[in-house]
Picture 1 (spheres, one colour):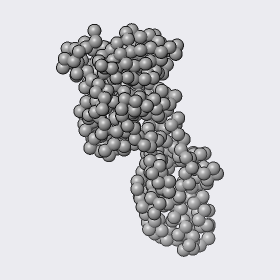
Picture 2 (cartoon, rainbow, N blue to C red):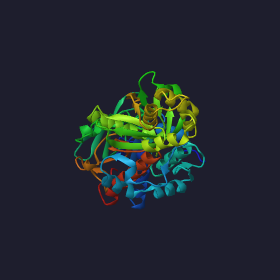
Picture 3 (spheres, rainbow, N blue to C red):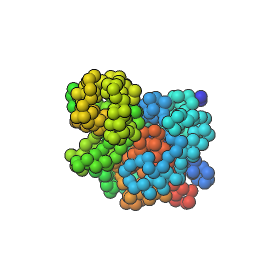
Picture 4 (cartoon, rainbow, N blue to C red):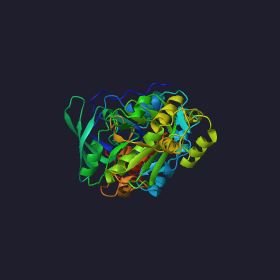
Length: 438
């Protein structure tokens, strides 16, 4: 694999003026820069493009994604895989650059993908660095200057575009002018990577609103200290996590692999439900979570299973379907020992198996979360260009918007789709004859 072209030295600003400045050089920002450059070149326009990022090393989120393998996308992506803004709005953006287009792009730039049983697409190298190096290489080949560490601290409208205040590697403030800006700063997840929420503040200063609440998404949950689930730390099994209204009405359910940890619960099912739990809890603190250890089984089904298994013990019956440690723990909690299973003990056991209440006391927070729920509403953006309806010349891409996907490569697909639309549309204005900075 060829090495990515070197970025300019830290703190190096080849010019203080650019036609397009991309703020944030993560997945969405790099994709926007690539397609801005490609669109300009295809249209015969020479456009000055710079992508700025506050990180000393680019692509931290890409490198840690998918356990270091980078789950590039999913073989089938629909608006139903996302939350936040309205499904029709999300669908319109996804349709501009779908999963097939993403796979074709990466194949074109030398990153072959493989489809796993889950439907997730990973590079055949099983290395996220393969993906990052391709993006950096293509951004440079498209004519984008990658400037970092270069932290944008403010963006102001001017008569001809925007003035950006940028802190360089030495911490010195510099000024940069841009005709168009693409805001691709991310949300607040993994703040050490640079997405610490400043992009949301920049959007607000330029006239945009930000949804409330803004909470972690794809984040493990924390249970009461000493809860019995924590004693099963390391146990992984399929389960269903259910979000319930205060009256017990099912609001949302997520099924999949679930991991018991020393602090509570993690795994895909838990990560997927987490944003729904946090958003619902903000609106009504009385909402609840419960867990069905036998996803797809109803209380009636589990009751029948126990009755049909007699005279075997309850523990022996559950061991056919659950790990031994969990089966024994559930039976102990329900008072369903090795003797005859009374009706009341059976009722308690059915409840424990299909609807274990989860006393959630918190979550692991933005430092651990894989995504952010909340951001700039799509209603404030022209979906055909990702340009602001409130601040002409400002485009958005990626996690800074109020769109977050479930686990499985969907957030990367949103980055590719929104980055493609923002970058190609920003450059299209110059191809159409808008004045280019010389």
